[in-house]
Length: 105
Image (cartoon, rainbow, N blue to C red; front, side, top):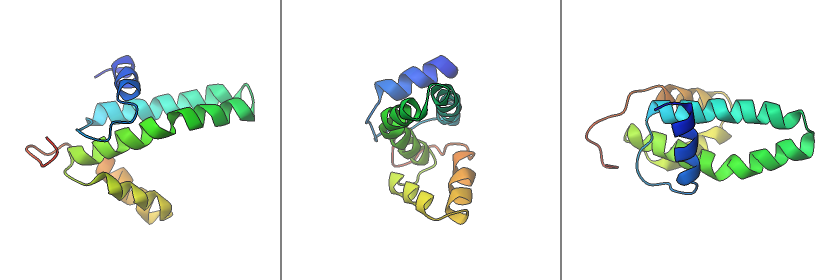
């Protein structure tokens, strides 16, 4: 999956928490968020905040689908609320290859 396919897939599945997301889809989306946030920040705090708000739900959805790809529940995203250790665990899981078959197929 390339950059544009990943972005269009994430927006098409805006609030879809079911299914799976490959590593490429997840990481291209993360790159889009970084670039979009930087670009929006050039226009001011309000534009940056609007961009962040508009991409919050698809970010949670692609995160849940990425966790499904490694056979974990999307609820594990709550680890974001545990500084450093939770972030490192989620980062470790995000770079893992998908597991076939799993319960989210």
